[in-house]
Length: 211
Ligand code: AMP
Image 1 (cartoon, helix red, strand yellow):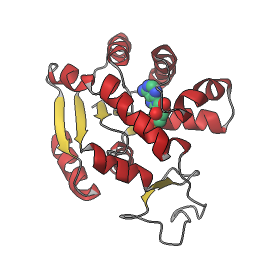
Image 2 (image 1 turned 180 degrees about the horizontal axis):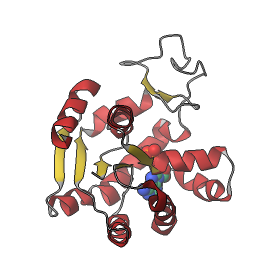
Image 3 (image 1 turned 90 degrees about the vertical axis):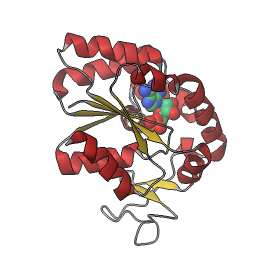
């Protein structure tokens, strides 16, 4: 099954994707993680996308689709698309790419949670720069001060999780990404998840639709 995880930044897509990867052998394709990796490695692509990301803007559709195309070729099925598509143009581009590869998207999980809640989550979000494990300083802090439970590396705040950038990202979501809700509803593959609940509860909701 190929699945899209859709929802506000901070709605829990990445956390659930990691659980599905470790429990069910899914492959996680997060455009945000891919771009951050390119930035860290100071590649040409990283340099190109950096200012968009740090200003809370979307990376242009053609750049995103080119990256996705190169990944899709080798990855096979059972893909979790996290943070992609983010515009109608990207959704249409994905459809064309999948058709060419004789594959399809079977489900779109929409992580429904209100804006104030996600802003609170994002501001308290920290992650391990090494293994990408995500923490929440209030609900799920690292056990040992600010060190990753898995790697022992100091957890960090993403540059684009700073309050002023977050406000911009929320607006971009409303303007450009939210229209995907009716786009996928009309395709009959849309599943609404109550993402205001605990990590475990959200996971159980998701799993019900996969099994
Ligand atoms: P994320 O980790 O999914 O919140 O993504 C972080 C940032 O990367 C976003 O705010 C965008 O600047 C950029 N980005 C990630 N995925 C996409 C995408 N599908 N289209 C455009 N920009 C993206």
